[in-house]
Image 1 (spheres, one colour):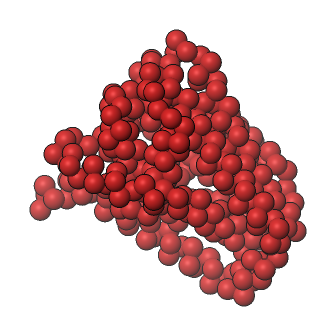
Image 2: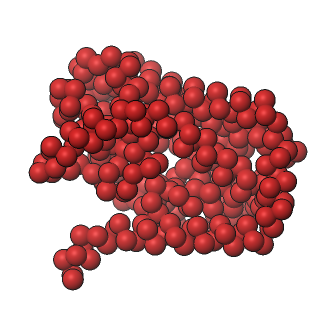
Length: 307
């Protein structure tokens, strides 16, 4: 029993965290009233929903470009269409498959199936995650300025855990991951530029929805508060951040931006829905990759050790 618990503890705790977060979301919905939630959805213009869908598509292409630059500069001669297929498959896996099959593992398996170097691909995936984190870190101070009165009572140790968890170890891993690309700063800057495009599309989507719902708020406040939501979602206490992301976003937008819980929760749910829909093309490429993963099941999985 102890061996089984040690092997499955993290998975069980994440599942419990997800269930708890969903329960809290249901409580919020009941307190605010389903009618008000549904009324909030009806205020969104169809044309603006199409604009948001377009922004999410551009955002996904930007994430493809971010990883593609890292792969190419690392010596992996991959075509953009293949990077796109692997990225969308990873996004689909993250949204729809069990936590034992992470999106990064699917990306790595697909790249290996195409015959690319495992070590470079693994390092590029880790670097891709870190560059995305670096982009959010750039706007996080804005969120801290706006919400400091809410976060100040929290213990410093909790804030540190939410941000990096063991900062010194994090910095060492970061340096080792980027070692391959430190000699190619233009590649890192190009990858970071794609991260900014992704972020602008995401923040722009929230900005459009906020204006439709009659709750206009500064673009930069949205950027800062979403970055805090992003870092909280990184805490491994729920499956793929389900529930935790929605709760965090609702908390910040209600207590800092002054939105009603109904508006905050409605926008959070719409963002999740658009994110899931944007990953659906990955289903086309998933069968061949999962087949390759099954053939390699005896190999040690990189799983959650990418960062």
